[in-house]
Length: 395
Ligand SMILES: *Cc1c(COP(=O)(O)O)cnc(C)c1O
Image (tube, rainbow, N blue to C red; front, side):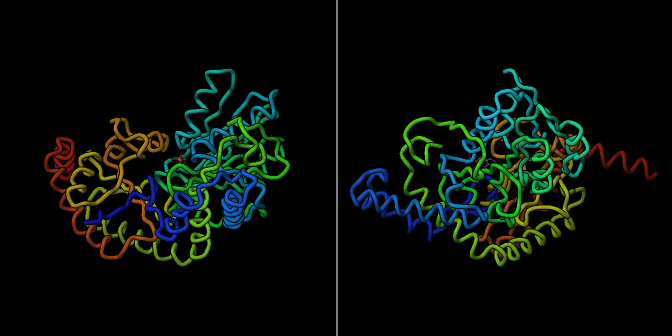
């Protein structure tokens, strides 16, 4: 039985159309795209087409697209490139809710000679723009804010911020891994200098990413080696996966609006019904300004991990915090930055949908989850205390 997969911000199913395009490039056309003979040239031509398709999805020029091995590499490269290109500037600005692919290198740099400002968010996960403006200075080398948050789906006004950053002479990078295919992105109409994408969040395979580098941006490669990617990223191209991300970008661009309308309707129904049926369930983050596919819901006074295990018995996949923080019992840094109370952060579950989810699947979750929460609350000492207190208060 196929699982009911509601964890698409962690990874997505590779689209069947993508697999079909990729397969011949493992077995039949395995040539090195840098070779002089025609056999390799075929792969080179396909990479060129993939580059154009990715560029098309985000309104970029093909030569502004650099293929990497993952979203994490793209994020690391952006930081590295900006710091190397502006060696006299020692200040970095990022947010308190970034993915570990930005957060961890930023923390490393803060221990190694750089000054880092982590811009806080409010209780709805919205960036504190006043704080940001106060800290942006002539010493700032790079500002990196994610376009959309992987845990809550909250969207940051990155296009507006890019203008501000430009006026101070710093580089602006955005991690758009969760935004790609879900939001309208047009690099021709904004001032963003660098932008990261990841294949496996977009129905392409794991192990391929993209770094967009605006024409004219000073750049230093992170992966030094051969002359691939016009000298911006060494290493023989991951031909099949690059073809895959090209096809995935094409599919996303073709049907973005139609799919997002469908996905949002399913997400909204899931959220509405769960909140209606389950007491003390609260949405984390700014509902007015969110990705169409994501909902993070706090079920107060229960353990997120326990909910996930019981959902797993029904073959329903979701996540608590992010995939990268699960395994530890610490609530996610995103929910902590939003000041979500401990009792709510611990019981927070993220559902993230894709084009492959159906109304039947959503109905199944709406039916199965409320009794799960009820059962867990009956076992929870905190829930008992809470209801006892409330009863006392009412009396
Ligand atoms: C998944 C993710 C990444 C990392 O991408 P990988 O390809 O898995 O390295 C970076 N940023 C965000 C927001 C993500 O969701």
